[in-house]
Length: 400
Image (cartoon, rainbow, N blue to C red):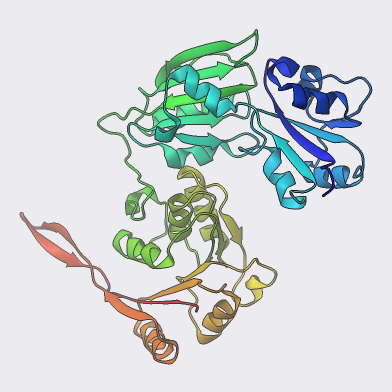
């Protein structure tokens, strides 16, 4: 077995002093060291070739491959396999080529500073990513540890909290943890006014006001939290639809005829690191869907202008497909052919013509065919009565 030529080393604010003797030796013997400016200061080796993070960052793998055979070190902050560069490297190089040297992560240090159990909180990163993605995690009494993008991030998150009725949430910014310049800033979201260092970790203890928006991650968000033009999968039907789509960590959904994006948005909220592609030919509806995704904390929703089957060309194979619009036999055939094994397909129909098509497809392919009839209580003069919604026929099946 050959010795690894690539070492990915986590380093803290105390630099070389915080590393084990063996790890310090790896850095001292390196021929190439890759990292950010602060990393090169923390672990200086004047005899090594020093490289900064490439731009675009995806070029890192090519830079490393070009130096294969040399003693190469990549420096990262804290644990390189926790929301850091190590995961990317691990996907491109074999375990025999790479050794990882973890350091205490910012999450572990922040948890210790706050006195919080890591088993009882959510760890998030918005570093180099849309800050809005933390919105989906705002829940009463939840504790969040967030790797931020820069000095402006805590104020942005304070605004998100306040707008949703969580203005009394306690916020703590921790900077340079473990170093001589360690600093701590505390306050509440609705009055947050601190100027903080650019490199920081944010701890949030979510505190809900009586009028706070309660938006769970389980499917079935209230219809009124979505902007729409009247065409939308309604709350009760949407919850039943997501139950059949079975959101899973990292899974990809195709939402065909996405409309306002309500199903795709709930898919993304329901499972961490999931992905969704909305296929919608109307530009006005794509704009609405993008706004809903941003407001509800899932800015990663990808929207495509087009119709099936042409719009499917070149897309990654999905784990689940929802057909909410544009139903036809051709649409089904194209989607079914693209679906991965154990993939789930769900189609909803309101019109008699579409319902008849689902009945025919069910007869040919099997699966579950159900009719969902929902009535909501509404005022009836001085009294209250049931107002029925249009029945929805839902067909679902799993690709075996």
